[in-house]
Image 1 (cartoon, one colour):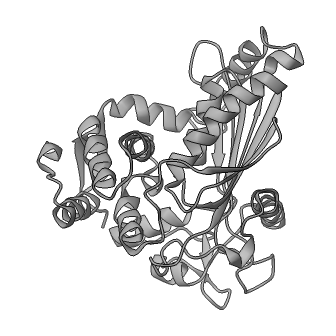
Image 2: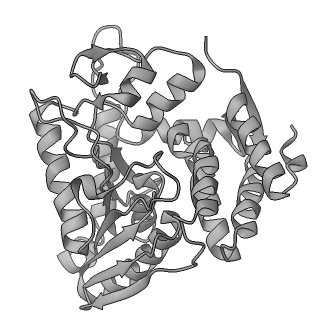
Length: 353
């Protein structure tokens, strides 16, 4: 049975979540950045990366594994390549810092990258790639996670499902955004299924011995399966090394479980890349070509039984428009948020619909 859903004013929800973070010492701007990114995921219909994460974030902050710092430290600055040490601050806080650096540096150098070590969960990767595209740049965002997937044919967790997002500016609308985890699905979606008491599709996960399962609780204790088998595993492996290797941060099992001991730092690594179309001589045409190509996907002939073909990011965009400023939340997620507010002395009265 699916969990009951309620709708909460998005602005009130963001203000409430920001107040929780501020109560734990995060500076106001950083608290609003983190809250806004989380609520944006829920408005996009990606609840696995939304405010359902707040209780876990709060537990970690109270246990000391996530810092209330408002910025990362720059440990290496080579102009077009920057390394940040996040010091376990909220991932959205340090990701905004990375994006702001990239916008300036990509325009100075044509392309720029920021690698971040000792980082924490940054929400949806596509949110950050899209912000770069909103600035007229081609944006790439990725991170590594604790091992969740076996090698093809294996029965041991070796690499995370390391998300990858790419966004390009498009004329006349929103950027074209690809945002994907390199597993068949995100672990957050499996946790949502467990919370809702629902089964998961075959092909998403296996148990701890490598046997297929549709039970979310078994999947959480077991392993996610790579998207596209060897291809997904190989790309996840390479991104693990790019994120953790270039930042000088953690790779593989050096990244700890997100839902593990809240006193143990997560230690993931992030990698961001931005390219300025002007330096390639296509600043006047790229956004038009992106929009036209995306539209050609939408206009392409559908297969039998299919009513509409979508370009990357269309589903999220459609949900965002349909939701407006009313954020859909499972009732149990809202209950947990209210409980966190009571724990920290932050009123949730504004969340009443």
